[in-house]
Length: 96
Image (spheres, one colour):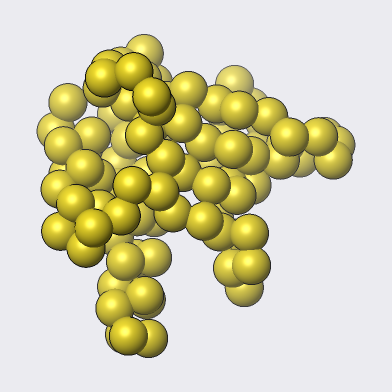
């Protein structure tokens, strides 16, 4: 998957294995099956599969939901995640 490798290379370039958005002023979101999820954390799973894990809060309540983003997700969702990671890394680099 092209976008997964893009995400991985972006994070590896700056030495990150996870991104936290808990205190982020503009919370990033992703949509799955018609439900909008606010992303709190993005990280690689412990197993070596291609994919990322998102710790999220769904729009329907205040519970923590873990989403495993893998090959079954749509290409546009992967592109959206890549864009989120790229923007956050650029924001972090500007602050360094």
